[in-house]
Image (cartoon, rainbow, N blue to C red; front, side, top):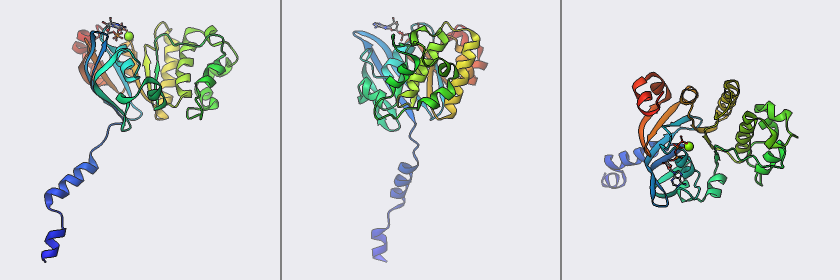
Length: 258
Ligand SMILES: Nc1ncnc2c1ncn2[C@@H]1O[C@H](COP(=O)(O)OP(=O)(O)OP(=O)(O)O)[C@@H](O)[C@H]1O
Ligand SMILES: [Mg+2]
């Protein structure tokens, strides 16, 4: 009898053990990010979480800090992260440099697309496949991007704007991709090409890719996304479902002017 009471854990200890086992770790999370360009305090306490395979629309007026937030997540040198944490699958991205974040699966497709001159479509893709290749195989990429398959021998910078955007996204998939960060992917593109890119983004979502999309075309981004974060002067003004923003005119007018 006395041995029993000594060995058995108390009720309180059991509670602690169960809580620590069942706590869900988010797939991707940023917690209270503060980032600066030199002395300029731009990202002022941004937090959000994303589940695996979700699309999150990161919205806000010009200068709200959307690009700066993506750059902070991708661990580029500017803006410099002074405070806050970034976690991908339990790995501390905030402790990484940009090449380490890229190797961990975070791929930023910047606004200017950065297609490498003098290289064909296929060379742009194969150059992105770091050794040993963890990213998508060419056949798998071409299955999602038939336009690129048809133009695989064409020089990348001679592609149309929409095709260059597709190549920029495809190149991110050729790397070891977990989290795709898209900065204004629809900029300057005709609605029919936007539809084509949306279809591709839905296909890769079905493959488990998690995406953050920054877009001036907020309606298009919200229709694609599961969830939305609205930034206002470097801080989070709203976080919730994309549907909620689409249905809330006051919110759209106040922060998105649409
Ligand atoms: N390199 C830099 N040095 C200093 N300030 C910068 C730098 N880059 C951006 N900023 C400032 O940071 C703020 C946020 O810029 P950011 O580019 O993140 O906004 P954004 O939401 O992406 O805007 P847009 O919709 O116009 O692309 C702006 O006030 C901008 O002037
Ligand atoms: Mg921007």
